[in-house]
Image (cartoon, rainbow, N blue to C red; front, top):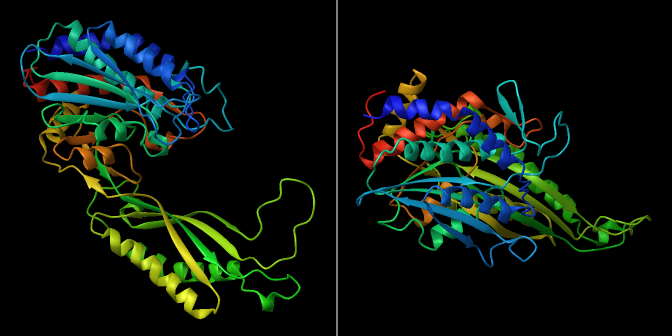
Amino acid sequence: MWTKRLFETIEAKRGELTALTCDLVRFPTVNPPGEAYEPCARFIGDRLAARGFAVTYVRAHGSPGDGDAHPRINVVARREGTRPGPCVHFNGHIDVVEAGHGWSVDPFAGVVRDGRVWGRGTADMKGGLAAAIVAVEAILDCGIEFPGAIEISGTVDEESGGFGGLAHLARHGWFAPGRVDHVIIPEPLDVDRVCLGHRGVWWAEVEVKGRIGHGSMPFLGVNAIRGMADFLALVETELMPKLAARRTRMPCVPDGARHATLNLNSIHGGLAEAVDEGLPAPVVADSCRLVLDRRWLVEEDRDAVRAEVIELLDRMKARTAGLDYSVRDLMGFEPTMTEADAPLVATLDHWIHRVLDRPATHVASPGTYDQKHVARFAPHVACVAYGPGELDLAHQPDEWVSIDDMVASAKIMAATALSLLGVDVGQG
């Protein structure tokens, strides 16, 4: 039974885990546009190749944003065990959002201070990826033989939908039956939480169409902005209260995410915004566009989610002669949730309790992450998110991850992987 030695090995790698997190942060893998993807992927691949992993680099040709300037390069590393068996796969996205303003440290310096690593992507989710890498390396350092295989992937574009990253891998068979059985994504949902899944999402662009006219004679045109205002009034008075009344059985956090929600992401009406000096032309707006972000629950139906928006648009159109509308779907994914009694979840629960001396909590994410692509293309695979970091820090200035939490999660991920592969690592 390997528990004591395994955990001591990981504890001894505290400095190495911290340094690896800093190294990853120093690759400014900002998405969009997709900076530094290839050097970051090759850094991970070179490290794992040196430990005996078979490493493959997978470019998502033709995916959104892919091109010679910003190729979508993913890395997949696989270490075979001593005999046939299941495969545990750790997946981490290497892309980060822009740094933005308000930082007290250089966001891409990898600053270590107060028991934390500071920088863009530390929590979301380079700290989690580093913890998974060190967890697997500790297994090898201990000389623990295991059946099956362990995989680690560093994928791109999660922050913009994951189409050039995990979606591309899943679509092309990297999670096919017989190849991968369990997937752990070390997203920052906190070190004692297992994230079972996420709400569904529907992004759409709504365009209200009117008729152009002279601004001094608005009665001869049909104002699309006023039509949009009518639609939004119906949304506020009728749809929003309905959404607030719906509550899911999914353990979404924070609590407000247990309700169906709708956000109005952006709106623009009339003439295009002028980039040069000068006054706009006096015209009636013949177009007004709105991007909406609807997050829906496992108890809801995708068609009904869309239909309740269409019903309000139809009413808007009927109220004012000359108005029309169109709806363009931008992105949509079903809610997904791994069952709480799945072996993957139960095993993580056990080791969280053993390592942290407190029970695990099950949660669901308010927004989607790459689990959606596993659910779409590899429904046979059990998949959850588990890792260090606090979700509230993601995308914020002065983002950080706790070194203690990275070490604890590395212990939990290492023991969980071995248990799922059938190795007796003891009871902690």
